[in-house]
Image 1: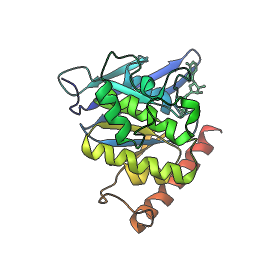
Image 2: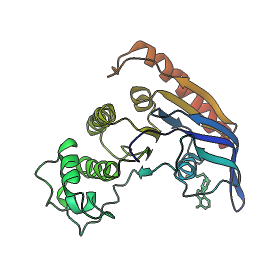
Image 3: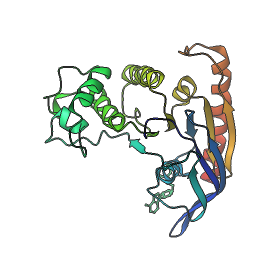
Length: 241
Ligand code: ADP
C-alpha cells in the first residue's frame, strides 16, 4: 500500500565522490509524516543527502533505511520543473504511468490549474510549471516527498503562494517531506524541524512548534531566523576556509 507516511533513518552515513568526501557519520531519524528542512552552505551535500534518501545513490559508509515495513515510494521535485515541452500539461502529470487521468485532472485542479490540461508547458508561467511538477510528484501518492529547492527560481510572491499551496495539500494528504532550501524563512514557515547541515555534520536540529498557518511576522520565528542565519554564515565561512 502506498500513501501512508513512513519514516526514514540514516545511521553513520558517509558519502564520497571519487576524491571528495562530503558526509561523515551522519545519524538522523525522520518520523513518519514529519516535515524536515535541511539548510546548509552550497556544496555541503544537501542534494546528495536527498539522493541517498531517495535510494538514487548508495552511501559509501553507513545505511539508509525506511522505518516502516516496506520500501517507501519517494518522489523528487527540483528547482527546474523538468517538464517535457512536447507533452501537454496533463500528459506531463501522467508521465511514466498508464491512465490515472481522473486523478491527474483532480490534482491539476488542486494546484489551481483546472482547464489548463491541454496547454503546453511553454504557455505557462514559471510558478504554474512548478505547480504541474508538484501535481506530477503527487500523482504517485508518494510516501516521501523530497524537494530540492523547488521554489528557488520563483519570485517572492509566487514563492509564498507555492508554500501555501504545498502546506494545504499536505494538510489534506500527509506525507513525510524533506526540503532543501536556501530560504530560512521558507524553512521556518513550513517545517516541523529545521536542520543545519555543515561540514561538521548536523549542528542544529531545531523543532518548530508554532501553529499553522504561520505568520511571517511571528517574533518567535524571527528569533530562530537570526540564529539560523548566523549558523549558516559561520558554516559557509568554515566550508570555504
Ligand atoms: P549541496 O546540495 O549542498 O550544494 P551537493 O550534494 O550538490 O551539495 O554536492 C556536494 C559536493 O559533492 C560538491 O562539491 C559537488 O561538487 C560534489 N558532487 C555532487 N555530485 C557529484 C557527482 N555526481 N560526482 C562528483 N562530485 C559530485
